[in-house]
Every structure is written in structure tokens, then in C-alpha cells.
Image (cartoon, rainbow, N blue to C red; front, top):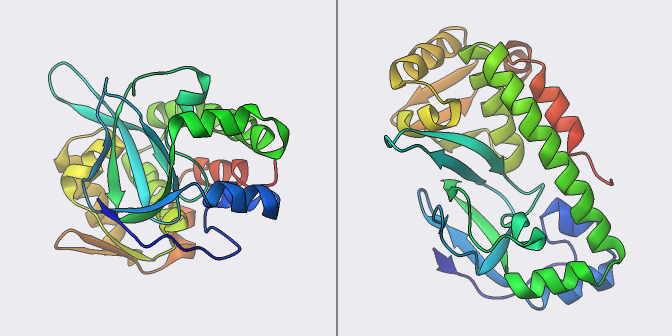
Length: 237
């Protein structure tokens, strides 16, 4: 994790913040710190405190549930469409999941107590947080159904497209270990799925990096959940 100089433009690069009024957005940004995270940097440990909330400006932050035997699976991924630490507003004092950086990102960091106070002021920020919460709940339900009903290849394609949309890039670092977390499958299944998409000319995967070569065809290879999730996070709410 690294701190950056505190400066900002009229838009914050975080879509949720950008739908605030300019006065509200700039008041919040003036109380925030710019923080960058590298690959595998941890924001919260499972059961650990949440002293800050984070508004990603790019990249992807992953939340994973770790089982007693050490196996882990992703339960949520967040990019510039949302906020990390949302449950603090609803009274959670500890993080239920391990939350770490999956694709290097820049964020705006705000103290949790300040965030809760700002949301409780009411107005546009509260409406956006409530709307975003509804979208997250919809996403969790869609994610559960997707894991049960769609193939690994379809889910892999969906996940790559969502990562592209959040990070704003066609190429990003991604290891087989991370992909097995994201998809909740063994590494052998990840290798097979990546090989199929690469053979079809949709992606290039080598040395821990994935590059999307043909986004349109990758959308056709993805399950229906990609479009559903993408539309769910179209603001304003």
C-alpha cells in the first residue's frame, strides 16, 4: 500500500462519487486520502477491523470467504463502480471476508466513522449508498445462481469482462491461484478454461498476465450474467 499526494480533479474516477453533486463530492474528497494498492495487498482480514472505507478509482478489489480447510472462493469483486467497507454503514464492526487487491488500483480512503456520519446526513449520498446496496444484493444472488448453473468457461469469460470494465484495461496481472479463488474451482479447471479461450483467439494468457484480444467474441462466450450485472450498476440509481 502506498499513499499519494492529495490532489483531485472535478471528477473522482469513482462512479458512485461522481453522481454526487459537485459540492458534496468535493467536500468528501477534501476529507479523503489517495491510497494505492498493489497485487495481494490486504485491505481487511476476515474478522478484522474496518477503520477505513475505500472508493476504487481503477483496478479490482476482491472479497473472499476462507473455509476451515483453507480453501477460498470469491464472493464479491469491486471496482470503480462502488465502495469497499459498505457493511460498516449497517453496523458491522468487523469484516466478514478477507479483502485484498486483485488488480493493482488507486483508491480514495475515508475514515469509517466519517463515512457513516456523511451517509446519515441524508440527501444524495444516502440515496446512492442505499441504491448501491440493492445492486450488491442483486449481484450476490446472481453470482450464486451463476456458480450453480453456468460452465467454468462461461464464468471465466464473464469474470474477465467484469475485470476489464472495472480496471479500464484490456490487460492485467492474473495468476492461476487467483483465478481458482475467483471461480471457486481447482487450478486444473482454470488451466483448461484459459486454454479453450486462448485457442479460440479470445485471450492471450502467459506468465501471470491475461490480455483480452477479442472483447466482442468474449462477450458471446460469457454467460448472460455479464450483461445483467453490467446493467445493474448503470447509474444514476
